[in-house]
Length: 198
Image 1 (cartoon, rainbow, N blue to C red):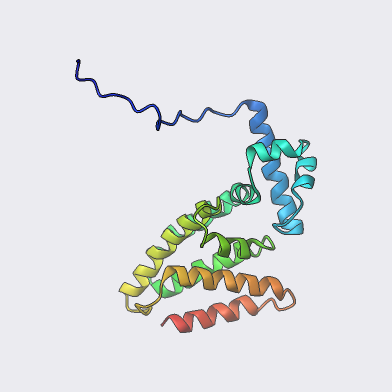
Image 2: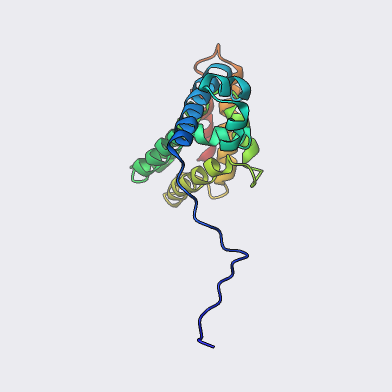
């Protein structure tokens, strides 16, 4: 016996292979068409139409994105990056409570770009198996940092949780989506949130 450590081949995962050029093009076209369709028709837009407009069959769409949430996750990565960047920028703000509410407002604005996104994010927060959890979890961690700083400054009550705030934020986005003729609704609800946090 040489003392070598045995490899556990049954649980080892092979490294993901990079996409072929044609597969990458199909992926990118699908994401681009999904972004346009979701903005125009909401997140329940027809996947068949998205595939057709991308110039591929529905089977190709499902090979890249096994379900709607996986496609939505891919579409929202750019917005997720900008929200995470904004949370880092606000992390040193002089007024931590206002910084937190400003960041929550940015989430509402983002969710408002796609009808149905707020509802999908609310559902994903309770479903660890959803691909949208990949969006929700980083947002949760970023928001928790802003909330903790606001609580440590004494400007936000200790009994406020980031999960409650994110649900409230999605509810505000959902309310704004249902009331397109009231453009001031989001600001009013965020001001109420700010008063309730103190």
